[in-house]
Amino acid sequence: MTELTLNADDAILPFQVANTAVRGRVVRLGGSIDEILGTHDFPDQVAELLGEAVALVAMMGASLKFDGKLIFQAQGDGPVPMIVTDYSAGGAVRATAKLSGGGVNDATRGARALLGKGAIVLTIDQGADMERYQGITPIEGASLAEAAIAYFDQSEQIPTAIKLAVGRIQEPGGAETWRAGGLMAQFVPSEGGARERGEAVLQSENDREAWDRAAAFVETTQDDELLDPSISAETLLYRLFHEDGVKVFDPQPVRADCSCNRDKISAVLSRYTADDLGDMVEDGAITVTCEFCRTDYRFAPDGGPERAGSEEGAHEEKPV
Image (cartoon, rainbow, N blue to C red; front, side, top):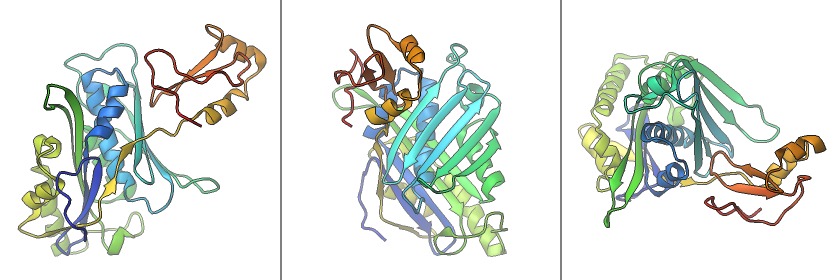
């Protein structure tokens, strides 16, 4: 169990309810989610959906026991046909979305309205020379939290409760910044939650009672409790579970960090023919923009190195 660190932003706090098999994580995102959402010029409701996805994948990815990556994708036929975010071991997160070019207005809010009919694809990348695990389920429910709960129910058979919140807050001095928060609880029998997928996990009346009680408490969580920087994750957990007792463990950091770099893009360009590369040239150079962090990488017309630097209004190019 860790010492309490009050008001910790950009961190994931694991917890366990008393001595039950109810375990979970709370995530509070400040500067990291403001950087990610501020990079993109998405309508607020799209930014909110993407922020929820980042909070969700951070809580899910924090359980990785290897040096890999968790990739969350939601693909549908709505005005936002795709959102994608990933979490790399160590706490790096990034995210982006694709808009169809119309259909997003003030009335278009929530996962169902924005994504439409489609599927959630969750990929666990364990690194080079290791097999990938991928789960695919239909998008169900009106919210991303409901869709994620349905994913766990169908793909993993793990009882799960999730609350997500994203919004802007007014900082001292008048600046508005994005914040996001999430709370996820699951019933995971045995130490560490190791078990066979598909196993019936609620095996006793006491188990069911413990889970139903914890899930009901999670459902009472309000958006402001997840977003207000003056309410720490520890305070929230105490509010919810003080009657039963709750233990917290070492927090894990989260940061906005993209894995793109010049070498990776150069390797991709090397696969194209000279004619294909010629078609990509604009203003005497090939410019490739990362969809996640919006960094511009410039290359010579043949795909080779060019003077480092970014286009006006873009982020500075990252060092290789």
